[in-house]
Amino acid sequence: MTEASDPRRGILVIRGGAIGDFILTLPALRLLRAGFPDCRIEIVGYRHICAVAEGRYYADAVRSIEYAPMAGFFNPRSDLDPALSDHFAGFGQVVSYLFDPDGYFEGNLRRCGVKNLIVGDPRISGTTHAARQLARPMESLALFLEDEAAAVFPSDADLAAADRILAGLPHPLVAIHAGSGSEKKNWPMPSWIELIGSVVATGATVLAVSGESDSRRTAALKAEFSERMVFLENLPLATLAAVFARCAYFIGHDSGISHLAAAASAPCLLLFGPSDPGVWAPRNPGVKFLRAPGGDLETLAVRHVLAALPEILK
Image 1 (cartoon, helix red, strand yellow):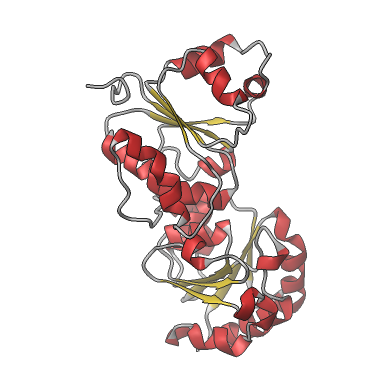
Image 2: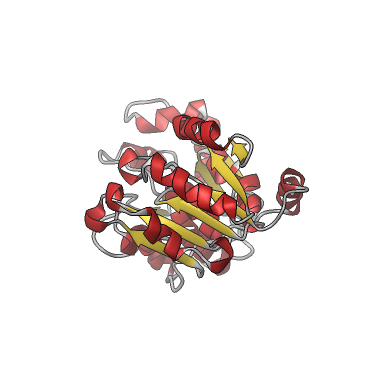
């Protein structure tokens, strides 16, 4: 048995980034879990994001990357926190996806006693799918990615929470997320309003999911559909994944929330603008995408989106 595969020592994965970045890393984490099923796996990342993995197949524990003593690991001359140093050094294998152009973080991990360190580049380039690029570091452990689709596994408690939220709502349930991390990736709000009006007219219950960064778009939807939509704002991601698992359909952009919906097995229609769906679109069954002409979502006609919807929404 190698040191990396010793379940007594465990594997630590350090992964920052936004929701989509983390979901796209799940296929790599799946390789670790399948390759070392009895090994303790811990993730250092943004706790509210990594919660979709903690105790839900991938990770036994999560530690916040915003934990104050972590700051010293980004300074080449810092006195490292002894307890955190001992904790990191106790793992048989560490995998870091942190952007570390000066090598300060790597140097401090080695200084505190980490022996087996794999450094993965979090930046995505070229035309290979992002999940495959993020899984390449696992090849040094003889773990090779075959399936680029991410999956999340809501707990029984997550599903119960979703059922409480959705209780009494008429089916089918259709979730929409009208935002993203960039305005260039967003379809114009007048187009969304026209589309949603058509979907509401079919008798479907439309769920508008949103976070803090979507406040302006959510306000526009509330002004138009205050009594004809259900607004789900700032749900914990694990609960939101369970909601998506109960939905007949999801419509969104190239966004982390769309990746979460696809990973929860919701059939999806995703609207792409400047980003390349060959690199960024979820590879899950049931995911369709439309790319706007010239990569400009201003040019994507509502009629084309309506035509791409399933029969139950027409």
